[in-house]
Image (cartoon, rainbow over all chains, first blue to last red; front, side, top):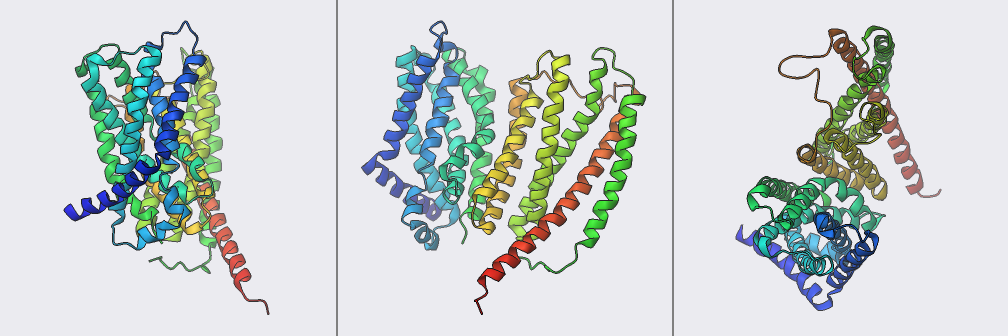
Length: 225
Length: 242
């Protein structure tokens, strides 16, 4: 088990090191996310109180920016045909998947650390009273999102449509995450107690555990040959 | 790893079953439609429009059955790598999308009268729409994958992940909102609908299930034959020019 996690960490470390040097995915995703916020503020009628729909706006932005980043998740492996190298290395497919997932999670979390303050700034949201609850919801929802996202990004990298395929496959499957994350976020933002969103948090946790298991197991069938 | 499939095996038996089931389905459909229009009483509150229920509900159940077959065959394909299981998955997914489309068309026709709106985001409506998108994605994925063997693997993975997600989607949209009429036939304390209505529903359910299996077998024969033609074409191209 320790060796398995060490191998996953090696994959994650490689991706994060490359990302730390180039910062191309982070910059693209964060810029895109802030632009979505700008588009929202112009698209919304000035009479609409943004704080009443902030949960929805935040999660639409996270999903879109995350999907954009997933498109590049396997780009390096594909371009230099480095995938063959990964496939002949003695790393189990599951560990490779978990490593990719960890790197994606770290990058999306960094983007979320930009998105949430920017929305607070643009739309006057207050997180102060609910920081702990929000952190739990964001972490759980992002894990579920990236668990499925990493699997489909690997498939998309091997298809003719490329990253265009990712949102088509991913969005319908992510509706449970959207429903529970957006409603929990919205309730926390209007000052509801954590006890009210407990059932949503439990569902997000169930979603994460199920898909971490299923996707790790299924990844072997994606990365074969 | 691949299970050898005898590509010269005759598919005539499967075709005969398809024709036989199709014949039975035709009889059951005529009988079922007669019951819809002349046997079942008109519902007191919703009026004549309620009769669409006898097509809507069986189509939904057949679509769920089809997606269940996709999930099982996908799992079987990843395990056994049997070409035939993949062929059944494709055919079942195709029919599932068609029957789900029937559900999504007949629903709004009824909803416009009963709910006063073509589309309402209630739990079951949203659920069926999301299923429809998942299996449309299944075909987009298959077509976007150049290597056919890889396409089959990817599709099987999506078939399994989708099937695992379906109960979660169901729970989440249920939690999200419920405006859909509650079941009137399948419930613990017994059906509340008139017995003629239940009979009409059951006959139509039988008819559409027979139709589904007949079409599934027919489509399966076509799928297998078209794969043989593709394989023969590839073999002909690979043969060195004399």
